[in-house]
Length: 303
Image (cartoon, rainbow, N blue to C red):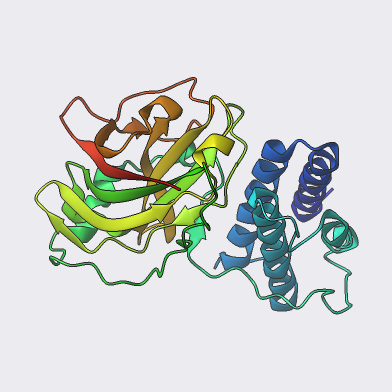
């Protein structure tokens, strides 16, 4: 059996594993499987080495990766209508299984995932290059960052009698190599104890400025659920991400979280933990012993 046939079989097995998890309601596992497969396909598409696949086949693989990302995003959304259903994704199985001979049009009007890549969960652990080795890329970085990422912040929910809404202002984050981070932003999510999303995930715009060991954001994030409706044991997560030009992907550098008993009006300073993000909060390792934190300010709105 040729290497390319083995690779295709591996992709097909991964796809089946993901759709099985999806149909069983094991959403965290399904999302992980979809994102890892999407990353593998993107890697093949963007490989400049001699490839067993034609340019047309690579384009199809790129579109397939987009559909995996779309299904993954649909599973993480709390909206009732799913943008990309499991039945839609299953229609693509003959493509991944027979990519070498598939010659029909792609069933969905999508574009391949852009060149800049997001790593699948846990993959960053396997990177041999340490953050510091990439640091030289930003050695002479300007005082302000270019606003390349518009962000996906959502407006405040309508008020309800007796219900509390939470606004969190992300003021700044302290990092020893703050000036060397390119296009830094923070992903905010609300998870239950099993790491399942309770809210739509939001990204801040790229940070506005840096100063010494701080990156300043100064943005308000509106939590998309009333405080009283958040499940016991839920937590609000903040993942700090930045772009690594050498590797051409956006990487999570560290994360922080706030549990329900920490939600109260006023300023709060929370600790930073090493990646990968542990949404279940079981294996936590502080990023640094230095007094560097994520600085937030909370406002509670109650009718």
